[in-house]
Each structure stands twice: as structure tokens, then as C-alpha cells.
Image (cartoon, rainbow, N blue to C red; front, side, top):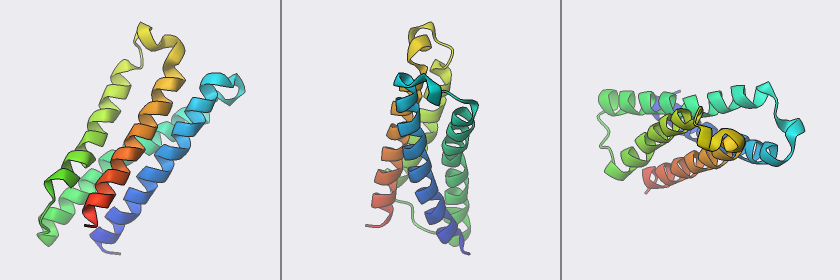
Length: 123
């Protein structure tokens, strides 16, 4: 598998994983039985994929000499910033009773950034 193929597969993983955990977390906000530890592990994996895909992308640009679309990089690295912002609000008293809503909407936002970055990468 080439770095480009790995990057593409990781992009789909980021999009689908964040979509799944986003919907799960939003449902958990209103259905307490869905508030289980595997949700948090799944959110962690989905959000860490933003870092992995960025590393693979940087390697791809460095090794293969691919010309990087600036907006593709903007959306990709914005996903990393979004993960940091979500994590920073985790302990905030403002979101104490809205934590699942925060991570649900945040994960769907990251999914959207992934879709936009992928769209820019193909045109």
C-alpha cells in the first residue's frame, strides 16, 4: 500500500468513525443507557485518527514531493485544533451537563472537516 492509499483509507476512517461516535454521543445526551465507557474509547480512537492522518499526509508530501493544496492542509489541521478544543472544554463547569452534546457535535464537526479536506484533495 502506498502512502497515498493509506492517507485515503485513513480519511474514510476519520469521516466514518467521527460520524458514528458523533451520533452515538448525541443520542447518549438524551438516552442515559448509551453513556458507557466504550463510547469514550471510541471517541478517543476517532479523534486520534486526525493526528495519524496528518502525520501520514506530512510524510507523503515530504517523501513523494506532492504539492499540497493549502485549503486541504487548513481543513486537515483544523481537525487537530478541534480535537484540542473539545478536550480543553471537557472539565469546564459550563458543559458539565452537556458533555455528550459537546462531543457529539464536535465529532460531527470533525467529520465535516474530513469530508471537506477529502473533497479538496480530489479536485
